[in-house]
Amino acid sequence: MAAPSGKSCEAPQTGWVSPRSVFGIRFETMARPSLLSTLSTEGKSVFIMPSETLHITVYRHSVFYSPLIATIAAGFLREEGLDATYFPKPRERNQYEMFRLGEIDIMQAAVSTSWDPLSKGIRDIPLHFAQINQRDGFFIAGRPTGRPFEWKQLEGARLLADHAQQPFAMLKYGLHLKRVDWNRVQMINAGSPEEMDAAFRAGTGDFVHLQGPAPQQLEKDGIGKIVAALGEVIPPVAFSSLMAMRDFMDTAKAKAFMRAYRRALRFVIESPADRVAEVEVDFFPGVSRDVLAASISRYQKLGNWRLDPAITREQYEVALDVFLHAGIFKERFPFEDVVVPPPA
Image 1 (spheres, rainbow, N blue to C red):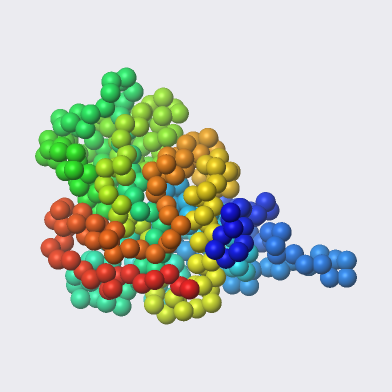
Image 2 (cartoon, one colour; image 1 turned 180 degrees about the vertical axis):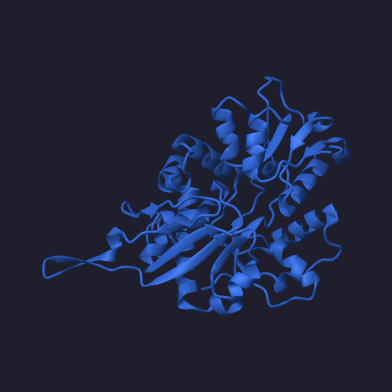
């Protein structure tokens, strides 16, 4: 099916990304052109190389964010004449300083990240212009006991939980919806997702709370079994999105990015999971293609992504409901102070 731009949503066969690493070391797209970037002049091939570079940083790297990854990995961005750097935000750096210094153009984040500065009266902050995920992307995996899972089993159990602000707030809200007594769950803070995974593999905890593809890898290794998905419990919500400074929104670069991003959305929604995994596998060193495909397939079935990238007021308000329930904030922040329409 044709993408809204009129271009195919199928990834160019020659689009290519060279992995540098993950979690702290940058990925960069390399100078190999796609089929649509070549011309013939007097019988010779002339390559049209990307003329500008977008600097993209992310809070997290996971197949949960496949629309953004595919924008680069599938070659859609390159077909718009743009190259890109893609790297996890260094923990010691402040994202607002990075924007102010011109080190990044776009950041993968969540609308909730804007509420803390707004609560302090800071208004010159990046705005969220496109949604990535409309569902919570965390799974709960348990030990392979063979017993059917019931949510009440979490009471009295040891749960390795992601203690970052939004995942923890969403977990609390999800358990509330399933009538699980939060105070009876033994929450374990093992640190980063990698440290949580390692701790579970070493025998710590009865359950673990992770994004794909980590729990799918646990299943393949026979160490864990996915027993629940928070995205099946929590209503559609403004979970993760892309943000940039206001002056970026009207640029030709922003509009070119959105054309590529819309094609990537269609690609990850409508393509077979194995095809998406094939395109993205170089972004996940050490993870097999079948594990990636299993994770992508689960997110597709969950309805995690949608073709319209606009962040809706309804899903924004659900995110606020979650954070008010968790007691993190005491006030509701206006939608218009945080969200803008996608660059057109």
